[in-house]
Image 1 (cartoon, rainbow, N blue to C red):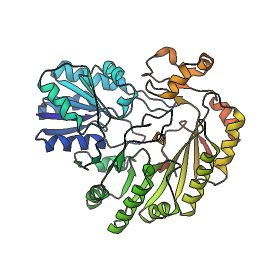
Image 2 (cartoon, rainbow, N blue to C red; image 1 turned 45 degrees about the vertical axis):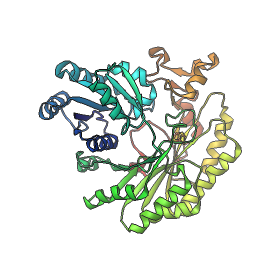
Image 3 (cartoon, rainbow, N blue to C red; image 1 turned 120 degrees about the vertical axis):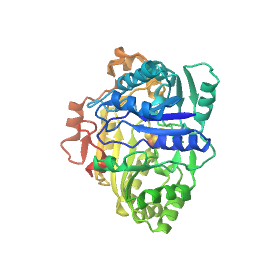
Image 4 (tube, protein in one colour; image 1 turned 60 degrees about the vertical axis):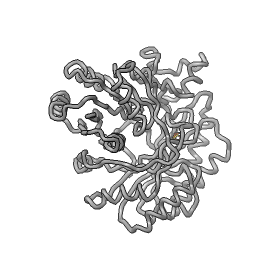
Length: 414
Ligand code: SF4
C-alpha cells in the first residue's frame, strides 16, 4: 500500500522536526509498504503543497501527525486543530482519500479529536506498530471513526528513516535534531499527558547509531525527545557510558525529573556533551523530601558544570500563596540558570487535574474559557494567580521568568 505521511505543524518558535513519522515510515517500509513524507513546516501555500504531494505520490491513504493541539501556554496560545482540520477536509473532499491521525496531541482526548478533525482513523500513543492494524482495518473496509491505541513493546527496536525532512532548514530556523532513548513515563503528575504510561527503552547502540547517522551528515546539535531522560538511572548511565566510548563530538540538551540521579550521571552527561538540563518541577501535594531532592538535583547538576533551567508549574487548587513563596525560596538557593514559572494550567479531558477542578464547584471561579468548550479541546486553563500577582511575588528577581509571555525555548535562551 502507498502511504503519504504529512506533517502539518507550521509552528516556528522553534520549528520541531516530526521524528514520529520517520519511525512510522520505517515500520511501514519494513512490512513492504511504500511511503513518502510531506513536511508542511516551511510551506508557504499549504493546500497547494498537499495537492502537489498527493498528485506526485498517488497514495492509497494519508497519515497526519498532530504534535500538539495548541501551544499549551496561556499568554501566547495558538490553537492548531482548525488548520489541520482544513487540510484533512481538503484531502477527503478533493482527493477522496481516507485519513489516519496520530501523534502526541491525540492523547489529550482521542475520540474527541477524531471527531473534531473528522479523521477516519485515530491512533493514540506510539504509532509504529499499531499502524499495521489500522491499515488492515482500512483494507478490509471495516468501520471508520475508530480509535486505535499504540503499544509500548518490551524492547523497542530503533528504526528511523531520516533525511526526508529538510534538517538543514530546521537548523537554520532555530530547530535542533531530536532523538529518543525511550517512550513513556512512570511518574504520575496530575497535569501531564505522559503520566503513568507504559515505558519502553531502546537499545543504546541503536540510538547511538541513529545519532552517528546525523553526525556523519554534518549535524552535531541535538535535543532529546524523551519526556524525561532519567526515567531509569541505570539506563541513563549505561547510555552515557556507551555514548562516551564512541568519542563522537556532539552537544545535546535534555529534559529531566528531580529523581533518579546521581553525581556519576551528571558527570557522564557533561562528558558526552550535555550543555543544558531542563528540570520539571511542580508544587502539587509534595512531601518535604521532594524539595530536598529538587535542591540536591540542582546543586549536583550545577557542580558538574551543567547549565540548569527549571520549568516550575505552580498555583494548584487549594495551594496558599505562603507555600508558593516557600517554594520560590527553595528554587532560589541552588542558583539554577533560570526558573520559568507558570501558573496557568492547561486542562485536557484526560487529565486528573481536570477531574479535580471540575469536581469542586468552589474552584470553578478560577477556570478560564471553560464555557467555550466543555470537551477541553479548545484551550481551557485553571488559574488562581494571575500574571500581575505573580509578577509582584517574583519581586523583580532576574532569576525568574513568567512562562509563556515570550515565545522562546530554554535551549535558545540560556
Ligand atoms: S515526570 Fe515529566 S513526563 Fe513524567 S508525568 Fe511528570 S511531567 Fe510528565
